[in-house]
Image 1: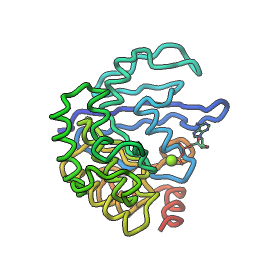
Image 2: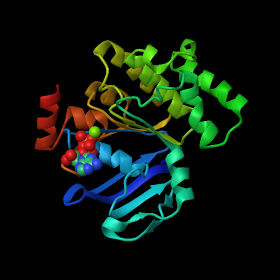
Image 3: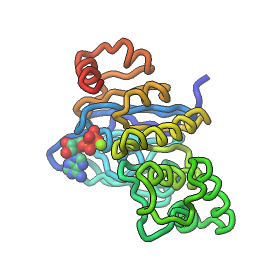
Length: 255
Ligand code: ADP
Ligand code: MG
């Protein structure tokens, strides 16, 4: 039986001015599914993630969170989500992890992890601190709680950013090139955390250039080309028997 769709995107169109970046993309991530998004630079991967968690407006198509459609107002370039409470609920349930970590430099690691559950969700400080310490331990940096971001390696900072996303206890995690800013040896510590999360059955949408990680962790791999899904399937199908000429070209260029 298929699990519930956590994120469902139907025929999404997104333009920046005259530039149409997403040209009708449909994508579903079900509970417990790991979906990787691959494709050349500029193909629209980050835009799709940002649209999914309503950081960007989109002009046409639907976005559903656990079956609940986003309420829009206006049309075309003027279309915006119309219900701020719904936006907050969806956004806090789809935690993003960015390529550049985006930790707050003026806060300790523990404060970074605690900030959003305290201020956005209004959770109890003691409970949040206990959870934050648990998540930091889980990603292997329990001893860095009182350090400043600048004192950590890139791999440690990214693991702190993952702990921060987890501390929101979201329905799904969205990763945008989580290992691209890291040296190869640091990349692996982050890949290991992502693998552990996949093994736990977390719902994840992962934009990545790391084909090995995508092959290892994904239930489904989606290849985006110039704002359209060109091919998708299991990692075995996409990496082992790519059908589209463009996908074959992309894979041979990245290997
Ligand atoms: P990817 O993540 O696959 O590299 P992006 O989603 O970042 O691709 O970008 C897709 C296209 O949209 C690119 O042509 C990029 O230049 C353009 N783009 C992205 N963000 C903006 C923006 N804020 N304003 C204008 N164009 C943008
Ligand atoms: Mg990108």
